[in-house]
Amino acid sequence: MLAVVFFIVARHHYDREAAPQRAADANLFPFVRSMDGTRPDGDLRLAAGDALVVDARLRRMFDYYLSAVGEKPLAAIRKEIEQELERRLKPAAATGAKRLLARYLDYKRALVALEQRPHIAGASITAARARLLAMREMRAQYFNTTETQGMFGFDDAYDMDAVTRLEISQDPSLTAAQKKAKLAGLDAAMAPALRAEREAPLAIVKLEEAVNQMRAQGASQDDIYRMRAAALTPEAAARLADVDQEEAAWKSRIASYLAERKAVSAGSAKLSEADQQLALQQLRQARFSADEQKRLAAYE
Image (cartoon, rainbow, N blue to C red; front, side):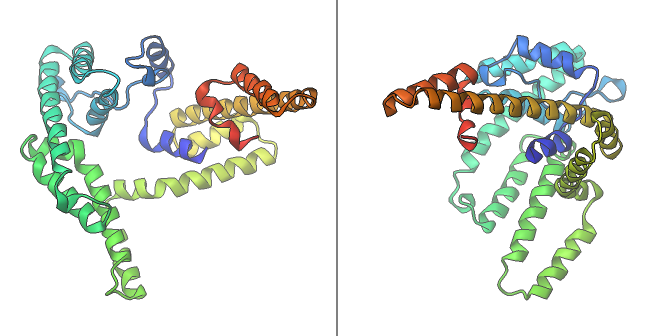
């Protein structure tokens, strides 16, 4: 559950009133089957004068639709994004956004070729640094400095910090004390936003530990919501409450299934092994979807 919690808090900002309607719309009209039950990641924002804000939220919106490659032709995906831009933006801003999308698609195609270069292939730290630097250099062919910083700046800083830390930790020429000093230097120079991103997983773990303690002491769901809202935001607390409900519903279904499974096993004791397995599989299919059945092994 903690992975779900961190994803919710660190990567998304929820509008408590509008999110249910957006989710309902997405359920009614999924772009591809894999997006059923989801809503577009990222966002579109306008600055003064209705100028489009080019930032990571815009890039994530592009990537949300582009993740449908394989289920839809690229031309259809591009059309869908352009229609979304036209729907949500004024004509001038939509035109600029569509031009940016065209350059972003060209950039993504170039990335495929870039990643085939031998010196940046592989999982080594040297290759990872070379890959990051090559990507930065290539972006200059498609985006201006403001666009590059807006769409990629934070992720670049995060990735380069991670690579640098791995380089330090794996450097055989450094003593343990020297490694500790260099890592402390990185910590001291870290931008506040990057520090918050790196510390978010630990903060969420501590928050959920506090939630578990509150539950053990008899706290109500309202008490837990108010504590989470104070620590995070009301929107994140509302979404975590939804996750709690989904988790409780899943546990209830599992408990019912295990009781039924026990009864089926007892009732089919005289059957052959094959017939017993068939009866159990029919029970699984009656109670769970194909994707949900993949999770059952952990409970059986």
